[in-house]
Length: 347
Image (tube, rainbow, N blue to C red; front, side, top):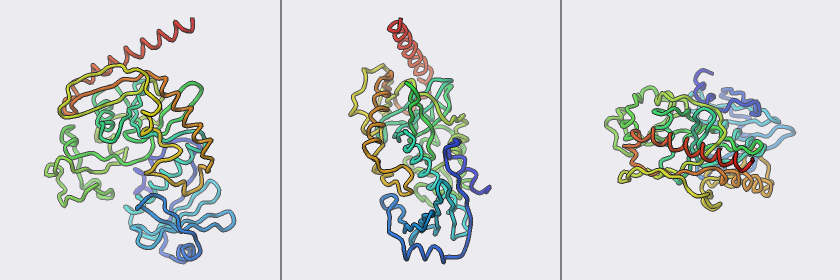
């Protein structure tokens, strides 16, 4: 399994997640039988289509012809088998991480968690949930805080949120990190493309030297690779103490301030349960289809998030590093002030 270690590491280390056995075979018979007898399902738009067939306690998912990595998934209760009909480790790793992602997400949702389009970092017992639309700077800010400040990296773009008592916690979810060549150069990361051959570049440049890449060309890194290149520590989960809203623009001046509580509609792009247009189908049938209960869980967790201190940050991403100390101190003072106010109310 050494070829897949970096992908298995992307799976959260929690006892609630199911077992996955991976095999390789050149026997197409079972896959062909499932395709002939199964119903067609689409897991994600334009990404992967399966034929699904249930026989007794087993449900079979056969990738359709034309898939880059022909394979068969067998679900038996809470256990899974992945049978790869190719001997190419790179393709096996791709399919494995997609399966891990789906199991992780739907198990979390089935147990009262929600999916969030957000980054998360933690300093000691204080976690920040970094929210904003695509392009707001979530990955850049979480990377800077975990690389150059005393924060540990939880998630860079997608997180799983759960509620325990009055607290909301964020956990990492295994998804590739897309980093631009310009950001890699700015951070001074020593990324050797030859080390990443079993993972695809987000865009095929035909040039293995990142120094020659256009500024906006991106490469995909696993969370483990990303953390290693950053020199950042990682953490599985953290209680969330505050929301941080970045707006990073090249022409922006630095500003950080505490905001009034957000409106519920402002989290529409952040909260992705029960419906996420990018991951819309519970194709393994783990979560269940009780939309109303999932919506109620979403509303409860949204209310808890809206009660947290909220800070907005505007900055030029190329100058962000010089403001990290100010950011940390400002947030710490804001959290201390909120804590004192809560104690006065309790008394």
